[in-house]
Length: 467
Image 1 (tube, rainbow, N blue to C red):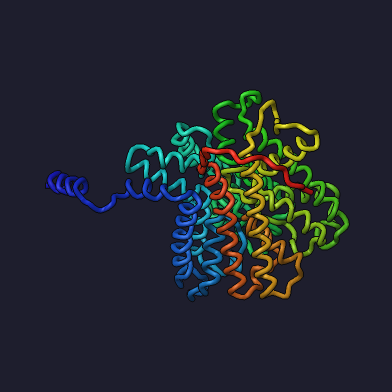
Image 2: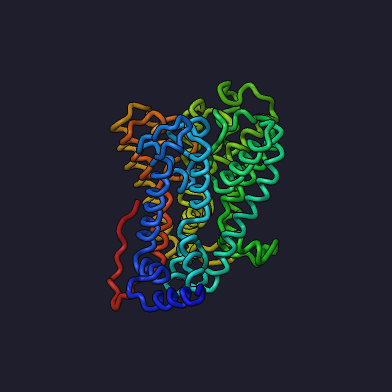
């Protein structure tokens, strides 16, 4: 009987004229990558907003206002960490669980999950799906997409499991509860590796200041999570054989390390005598705080001190590092470290009079430089537009507004407290900026990489005056 019913359903499925799930993705990928990514993120944002708007999601049992639930949902799926209500006190366990699922979905990449589901149904990825995945999650060969999809999931879950196993015993000791320790350890493991910055403790991580058994694993999770999955693929295949690393991996790890050191030195020097942050601490604690801040300011979003107490020049330095962000195809945001590297290398090549941009014995194509310039310009335009809109509805100083806008665009999550103070319109602006920051640069880079026109003529060359 069951076999007969199954055969009937299978026969109906084969003959059904309506589009089947495995046909939807190829049809969807006929659109530009930016459009596809935006549509998927919008659908996810709507779904998680609906869940967080339920009375059961709030600790007091009352429905959360739309602007707060939407803001939190977008912040979770874009792995940003900005909040308008306190995560520890406002949301119930169900609400916090929804946020955690949103972080995981956003960290794995909603696009990646869609492609994995398509592969489950079709048993393979079509050329269009592979091309879309290639530009969405970052790989140079179409044949690597299936492997990379598996590595994205397995690497993410493995690293998160290791972080959780390290954090859970310590949280059990601190919280003096098995259930609380287990929940907090799992939450912070996922939040840290995905560079989300959400915290379950009222007042943030300041409560654990001086506890390396909690802070160091979180730092490591954020730092490793910012590398990007193409880097993981290279390290898994070629181990520590530096000569066989891809140019992308070399640039990502080199620039990431340099920015970590520069950020720590800058933040430590600027805040060294600030009694409101680290001025009263010992030298060793100051150095640790500087390393922690440098790790978090490019995308992590966790903080041991009140960001609003930092000097204005510290906020400006943090703005620059947040805008850069982390590695391409990672959970980090910003314009990405390789984009910065390409721009700086182009400046050096121009200063030297070189015709080509070269690094590590490799020549960077000119179209890569054009994409880097486009991504940077788009990022700056988004931040400028959002800052202007926020200034129209807020009396906060420019440095605070700019800081919050860049944090939203770069999906960093560091905050001077402005998000909570804004009226609904301002919260919607930041939510849109978080989505644009997550989808915009990636989508633009993918669209530009795919779209190539073969012109049948060449216009005469004429050099305008630049500078």
